[in-house]
Image (cartoon, rainbow, N blue to C red; front, top):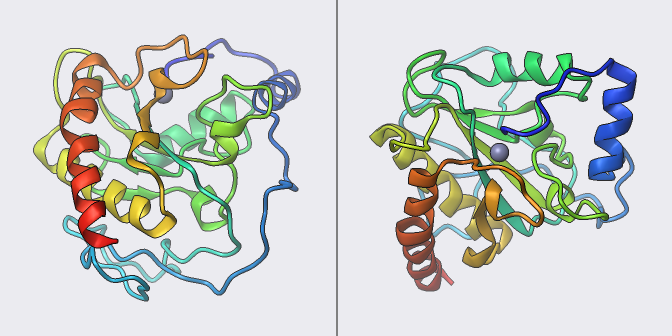
Length: 227
Ligand SMILES: [Zn+2]
């Protein structure tokens, strides 16, 4: 996310964010609860999945499975961002966003680049577990893209270079699984800058070009074969 970097007192910033995004802790678009489920990032053709394995993976941990989610949200978009920083990870961005007065890490997923986290590692953000609205893109009065958009941030600055091969592989796998699971139209897999009224170059021209020319067409073909 490369907009709204101006520091504001927390209370003002939160009000500003909510005004911008229309965020609410009681979203009207919740359609009810469904049983807890997990994403499967290996078996692209499985209609219902109960396990998740991905390469590269985060180190095993005694903490609860970060992929397990509770609640349900109608997802219509996948919005891809870059951090516009050389290094970072979900924890660093979480602190940064909280310092701006936001509720927590604004993205749902972060894909590390080897500087701050293992190259290609997909970090599951705290708001994904709660199936909480995103805080990564504005542009519409009803906050459509935050309310229904899954935010994925790749660590790095991709105005003039591509993400690492491991990051690209993880991004493609993650997008494919999310789009399949939530029936997201490939045309709704966008870069931040493609959002309405977006005044940003995020996720960078080089990555954006790859999304347009490679990711979306390939996704269209893959999903057509899966459905
Ligand atoms: Zn962005």
